[in-house]
Image (tube, rainbow, N blue to C red; front, side, top):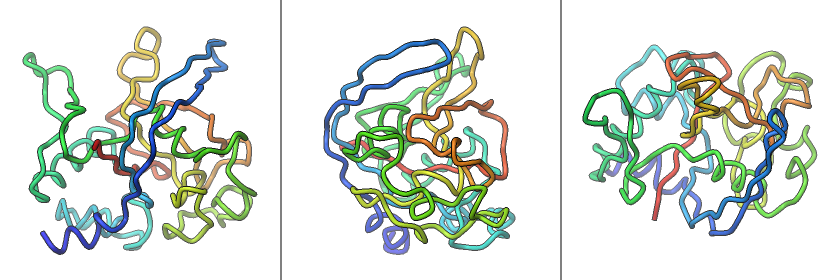
Length: 225
């Protein structure tokens, strides 16, 4: 337990409640979401933490302090539950009675993925632009990454102390992208090391199938409180 706390508890930030205005340029829609206070990890989940919890050493080959990548949405959800269990917390995720849907208990004290709205709200951290700072100072992207993923926390954090919210790797969120059009595809946020500057915006939203794993896609831990 103490070893897990070293990896997680001192690396999580309290995010204040508020409201975020979201938009989807694809369908020309805008809407507001109320955000309850929550907790969010200041760093992406690293290969070191992922391999320590899951005992899967094959995903630690790119370097211990780099974000874990090549993990599916299902892998990320399973990791959250496993970390919760090993931390003595209640798991957030469970299967529906028919076994076809993953449900989230938002009142659980365990670890989970951030929602789409929580992610953008935390990324902006009270700022109003599409980025919270100069891109070269805050993000690894196509022009400065050297074509590879980098250790977490090497760039400047946003005003709330969160690192790599833009660039380095994309991040899985909880939400379905557009069920009517894309079925179970889940939302990705943040941009990655191979994206041009226009890919690294707080408002960018992409999608991927929850079973897919990609070399510039990882995740970050959230927690209700």
